[in-house]
Image (cartoon, rainbow, N blue to C red; front, side, top):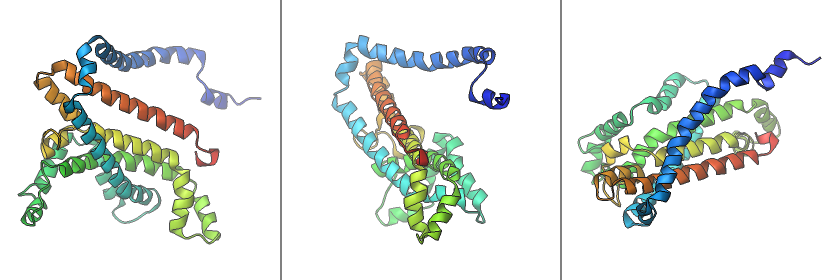
Length: 277
């Protein structure tokens, strides 16, 4: 006889599905309507397509792609060890480390920008020491990367931490009995098994960096070709002669990039072997 609880866990009953269908549909419409309106505006407004290839748009796009990719690289170098440490180790100060990792996720971006400015500004806690040695970070491309890193890395760490926690430590113990070093076990066993979480976390981190606005505006400013990323360029477009057409063109590019990344990650995760899922 089939367990009713198991059957209920696999699928919704028709009555419950009908109750949940309405709010689910409303949510889908709430998300879809603005995106459809954006796409429709780009088709109906001939100026939008023309502005996609203007130097203003191309400079902002290039800077956003370069800085967000650099941010992702740094986030992987720093975040992968941190995520594994949080998932496996029980060390003094772990709760404080978790708090510090999660705090930028709930901190207003403008507060993050101010904090970075008072830390790395010319008169900042660290910035003053750097300025004395000829290194000035604020209002440079480096500041863009640091702002993105501050707000985006926690998304990678938290997602990957959950992935590491889902990997049975039995695999690591078996690897150790076969003579593999802990580091080799991490690279050859643990990380491949957590690959879906790594892919998801990397995309979340990259897209969060790509869409960063508040911290970048305060800490790096908005200078075309140097610190003006796509989100900042959207604001500039509203204030310039490009108007709404320029903002729609920039928004359309970001929408296309986000959608493409989402589809690539979903395909990549589905193609993972069963033992790595």
